[in-house]
Amino acid sequence: MNKFKALVLDKVNDETNLEIKQLSMDDLPEGEVTIQVEYSSVNFKDGLVAIQNKIITSYPMVPGIDLAGTVIHSKDEKYNPGDEVIVTSYQLGTGHFGGFSEIARVPSGWVVPLPKGLSLKESMILGTAGFTAALSVQRMEDNGLEPSQGPVLVAGATGGVGSLAVNILAKKGYEVVASTGKSEQEEYL
Ligand SMILES: NC(=O)c1ccc[n+]([C@@H]2O[C@H](COP(=O)([O-])OP(=O)(O)OC[C@H]3O[C@@H](n4cnc5c(N)ncnc54)[C@H](OP(=O)(O)O)[C@@H]3O)[C@@H](O)[C@H]2O)c1
Image (cartoon, rainbow, N blue to C red):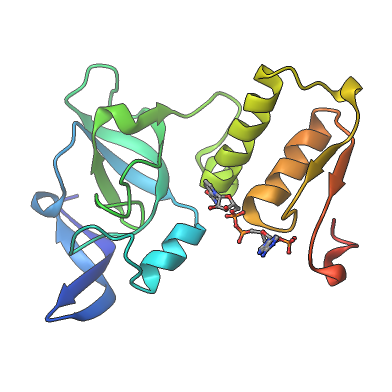
């Protein structure tokens, strides 16, 4: 595929414009791994990008702070065409063309193989918020947390990271206390 579609945020004479454009492979930034993007999550940072917040470091920019897809070309022998991969964080979607594009090209150090047991779609349903929640639980367990120590409090529990943290902890056998400032969300929690 030489031509493909991407959401492009551009700035000309202080006017910003967000639209779906046709790009070619030559428009993509440098990187060892080229990926056919299947999914990208919509994260809080994407919201900031959409309202042209200062987290964008250069224009034009393709937003999308994470992506999951299939490798179509790799200059790094760690990856081969057909490999299913995830990319999240670094400058993806803020300083380097991101996941709201049919094709992405990224540094190989940003690429993570799709974990076994997870589909590309599931990986982006969890998204960067789920990854963040999982890293937080992992860090607490590395520091000795275990279910026998009693309940775990999750603040901001209706939010992206909080709701996934509640899910992860409950599935791992923890008693979870979910706190929220939104009384109407009590039943959901
Ligand atoms: N999303 C990511 O990928 C990611 C990655 C790294 C770090 N983070 C950080 O993780 C935190 C949560 O991110 P998120 O994406 O889950 O955001 P979010 O979906 O907007 O959720 C944040 C939650 O925090 C609670 N909250 C908001 N204002 C508050 C206040 N003034 N006092 C107390 N609680 C308040 C609200 O929950 P209740 O109404 O239920 O109380 C809200 O739903 C943020 O600090 C974010 O920067 C997020």
